[in-house]
Length: 258
Image (cartoon, rainbow, N blue to C red; front, side, top):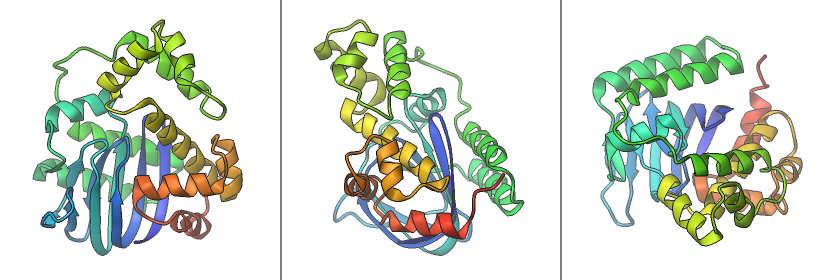
C-alpha cells in the first residue's frame, strides 16, 4: 500500500490522514480503528478467504486481524485505545463484531469534519482536537458499565511513564498491588490485550511520534525502547500491514506543522 499524509497523536489515540491506495496486508493492532475514505468505498475483510466487503466507513474492533484495500483516495484512519473512555464507549456500541459499517449520518459528519480540517492546514494541536471531536460523534452513547478498574489505571500510568525504558509485568503488577498472575488476568479483562502486546503498541506510537518529529527510524526505535530498528519495523508491519518506509517518505513530504 502507498500512502501520503500526516499522523497526529495524543494519549490514547491517533489520526492518520491523507491519500492512500493498494492493500494493507493481514495485520492487527491494540486500538480500535475507524476507517473513513473520503472519495469512495474501501474494501475490508476480517478472515482469510472471506469475501471482501465494501464500506463507506467502518469500525474495526481491537486486535482483530484484517485486510484493507482501496484505490488512490483521500482517507482518514482513527485509532482509539479500547481502555480509554471513548474506546470503551465504542466497544459497547459495536459489540463483538470484527468489522461494522458506520451509521451514515455519523460517517458523513465525521468525514466532513476531518477533511475540512486537513484541507485547512490546521496545526497539529488543532488536528488532534478535531480528530477527538470526530471520535466523540461516534462514541457519545451514555456509559452502561463501570469505569476502568482503578488498580489497572495506576498500572497504565506507570507503564506510560516508563515506556521509553524497561518495564516488566511485575513492575506494573506492583503498581496495581496485585500478584503478577492476578494482574495478567485483570489486564486482559480490562484492555482486551496481553501485557506485552499493549507495551509494543505504546512503544510503536512513541516511535511514530519521534519519526514524524524528524528522528531517523533508528533514533526513533531507540527512543521508544525497541532493541533496534529492525524490531521496530517488524512490529510496524505486523500492526499496520504496510512498509514503515511509507511513513518516513510521508514525513519528508509533509514537514511538521506549527
